[in-house]
Image (spheres, one colour):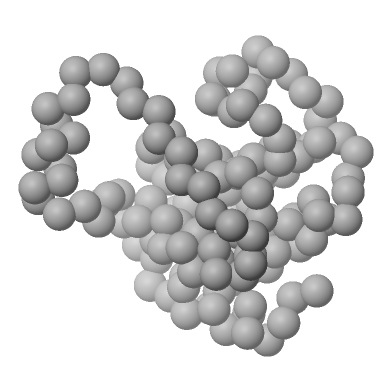
Length: 139
């Protein structure tokens, strides 16, 4: 269940969002204890700011739909703002990951990456698509 610490982290993490953000939650059609908790957390995040909207897609796997948005598996969270930046989050953004997830939500709202100028210059030199996955251990 969500704790007061969760609620405070969400309130602080979403304070001052500049633009709307949509969390598209792709979840299996058969809920599990883990996906129910994940959905409750996402609902709390959406309640935390009038600039965050949660869209739940709890259907059978539709490979054409999932391919169109770049989802490899469910559950998955697509974080998008004025445009889709390609952010796909797999797993529950709970524990230590909550603050990182809220930071991503803020960056999408602001339309900025948070990368240093040198990093942005290096990324600008890329000539093709890059697939990057960051894996974290459960907390």
